[in-house]
Length: 141
Image (cartoon, rainbow, N blue to C red):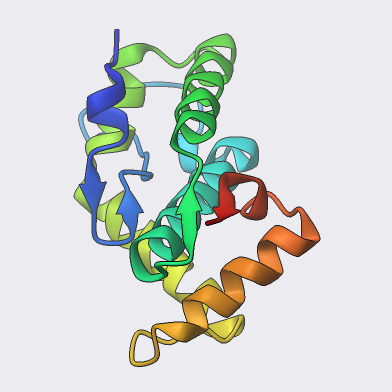
């Protein structure tokens, strides 16, 4: 079974949120990155974590994120993906890079700049106010 620690190990854009089948995996299933429910939720967790890391007035709801990760794992298992396939997805360097690129694009499109940390707070407050998939993973301190 995949451990929580291996799923939420910090990486560039926050929580380890990238998944992809390793090149050696043989499967008739499409890569997990093509399962929108999984890929998008992992992106939301990563963005929430990035906001948490850069904004002192907002905290991440870690237990909620961990529960979501377990739900995503269960969903992937229900779709026929093995724990080994999920682990390969989580540990794939190319998938981590792809997810980072998606996250950075979302942040930039929504006004967050690494040069201006306060922009992460503004984005976080907006996500919380909208009660978005990212906002539910955050709380104002």
